[in-house]
Image (tube, rainbow, N blue to C red; front, side):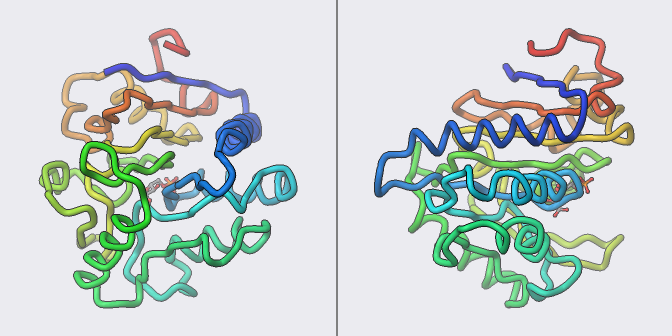
Length: 247
Ligand code: 6PG
């Protein structure tokens, strides 16, 4: 699989680069068209969101963005655990984006019904590519156990599921979640991993370098049909990579 690995000296430099990507992509969007993005939960995405709000509230064409989520915890939107709450407080409430452009997963609703409802919403709002909705940009954090969105290592079936969104249960957190499935994620036009910190160095090197056993990590199965997969790392997360960067 081809991917590019971009390493930045700091989280701030990574965030600046991500902002530059958004600015460039949004500048190319024709009038009356939109750019669809699926957000992720997690601490690194949260840092990036805050950085964008603090430094780019006026410089990004937020009104061209349609915001979705790749996963959500089944909790009300004001809950500490809500991915929507995190993105709203860190970014969305601080930038000029119309409410009508924000499509949250309703974590407070019945999970199976909401997974179906959200799949319908995504299908009816986002243009298709190869018979599946295609996000322009899918943002992914990386879990210590190699999970992405809420696809954990015990659910490889979520890569062959015919549904767009499914409900998963996290016994360790006693929590249900709704997640985009592997086929939907891999149908995205661009997928960006955003990963920082020393704690992620080992899992990053296992997956990026395809070490033996790493095929069991959900993140190893991220291969967008478009071929556009980018790992955005800070120095710490990249510290165990042996191969050359920007491959
Ligand atoms: C979530 C996620 C999840 C997250 C990773 C990384 O809702 O928790 O979408 O996939 O991105 O667990 O999270 P950290 O950056 O906090 O390690």
